[in-house]
Every structure is written in C-alpha cells, then in structure tokens.
Image (cartoon, rainbow, N blue to C red; front, side, top):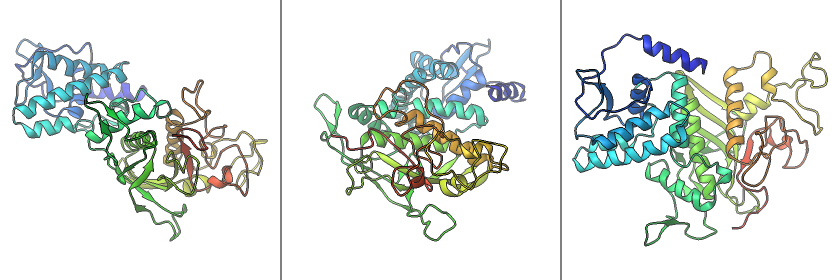
Length: 409
C-alpha cells in the first residue's frame, strides 16, 4: 500500500497535457482517480478513455463507433471499481462490458479496435503504471477475470471446464479433445474420465521439460513439449500460474520435470494432476534471470534451528521436524531468488492442495517449512531413499490438485 501511495502521488504530480476533449456519454468515476481509471482502460480497451467536455464534465472519449451511454457507464464503472475493494466482482463486469464493446466495433467494421478489446486481458499495458499498480491491476484482471474467485482446489471438473473454455476463447490455450456442446449451448466434459492436452505455450509462457535440475550440467536441457493427459482443474491451474508468473515476475519460460500424465503411475502424476517445478527464465526490470530450485534454493546452507548463533549447516539433518525457509536467513542472499520462491510457494498454497487433500481448506495457508502437500527442499518430512520426503525434492517443487493417490473419475 505504501508503494501504491507513492506511485499515485507521483502520477498526480507528473506534468502532462490536459485530459482529452470529449463529447461522448457522461460517466461517473465513483471518486476514483481519472488517470488511474485511464490506466485500467488502456490495459483492457485501448480504443476508449476518459476525458472532459468544455464544462469539465467527465465523459467517455469515443474512438470510432459511438459507445452507447449504458455501455460507457458499465465500462468506466467497472474500471473505477477495479481500483477499490471490489476487484473480483468488478473484473467480471468489466469482461462482460468488453465483450459488448468488441461486438460493437466488429459490427461497425472496426476490426483493429475489436481486436484491441478482445486482447484486453493481455499484459503489458500500453501505458506503464509502475510496478506496484501494475501488479494490483494484473492480479485483479488476470487472476480474477475468469472464475478466479474459485480456487483451483475448489473447482469441480464441470466448473473448471467452463473456465478453461473461456481461457481458450481468449487464445491462452487450446483444448484437445474439444468439450461437448449441448443443444442449449451449455458446455460439458467429453466424458467423466476425460484428460486434456494443451500446447507447450500457456498464456504466453513456454513450458519446457528437463531431465536434470542442475542448470550447470549438460543434462539440464529444457525442451518444449505439449502438456498431455491433464485433469481439467490442472489445466486451469497452469493457465493461472502462467498469468501470475509472467505478470508479477516477467517469466517467459517454466521448466519442469513432469506435468503430463504418467501412464506408469496411479497417483496424482498418473492422473495428470501434479507438477514437478524445476525453474523459470525471464526478465525483471530489464535484467534477465534464470532461477532453479536446486541452484538457487537447495544448494545453499541452512540455519541451526536449535541454536541460530552456531554456524550454518550444509543441509538439514535427516529428521522430521518443522523447518524454515533457508533463504530468509541466508547471508548475502539473492533477493530475487528469495522473493520469487516465497511468492511462488504462497501462490501455490493459495490455489492448489496445501494442508488437505480435498476442497474448502479452512484456516491460514502453510508457510515454507510447515506440513503441507507442497513438497520443497525445506519440507519438514525427512524420508531418505524414498520418493516422498524433502530429500526427493532437492531439485524441484511438487504440487497437485486433489489427493496424492488415485482419484476416480
């Protein structure tokens, strides 16, 4: 909030031209800052903006086809509420209004404007609002714009399918097999056991498979491949993951050691409901980065939890106990790695299975080092020689939707 306050103050103090003249429909900003409303509109609908008339009344600037008064009110009202405490509901209203606006431009033959609106959920915006405000807007738009109020772990397969189809309509993914459309227009699973394949590029982020987890070795060779045999809830989760990582951190690639269904197993991986996350590639504030779980997390020392004054240890001893996120207290830590993995864990705990194997988890999410279905190099359970404990997750994070074992259908 402090960062947002600073940015809003800076925007207010920035010298610039007067708001554009307009003779479009009068709109009510509901007390929201005019410049910030225009930032939201610039992100979502490049063809419209807020301006003023000769008397100082706030109006919508028409670009091309005239926007009806009711639609103008819906657009600007939703954009203004995005900046308040009603983001999730406002984003739904904004998407509905954008759909009407795209249809309006299409019918008027203004295909460039129609495409600008249709692509409205994409990032970055045409106007740079600053990192903190950008994060706020993109979280509300990209995360809540389609079904985001329902967590991945709380989705039924039917409700997840509806969201996945909406993502497909926005060009973020394609779905194979295609869902079944009933005579009344409703969308259904092809069958109760259906698994889906999506391209390796998800919402603009490339997903690449690698056998190795140490980026210093030749065995670390990420290769793009379609993601096959997925539970539809996991499809939704991967889209949301891509949107979050690209908008918040500038991620362009996700490297993994397994997302597609593994036919040799009868568990969450065998059911296409899990990911073994290895690392990411991207660029933040103009600086390229490549982070991996092994090199930038596990391959660092840990504190002595019994006596923090003692020297740090190479790794945790083989005991099961509550641990801590090793990077938090690491001298000379790379702040990007520390903050990225902390944010990723918090995002996963908020969407996928955390303390329970079912939906509707009650209570606060876990923190790194506490008991969870999310596996990391700092997981509290020690199980050397097995595929289950933290020792088996030195090179990747694991998370899932649904139970660890089989789930039918």
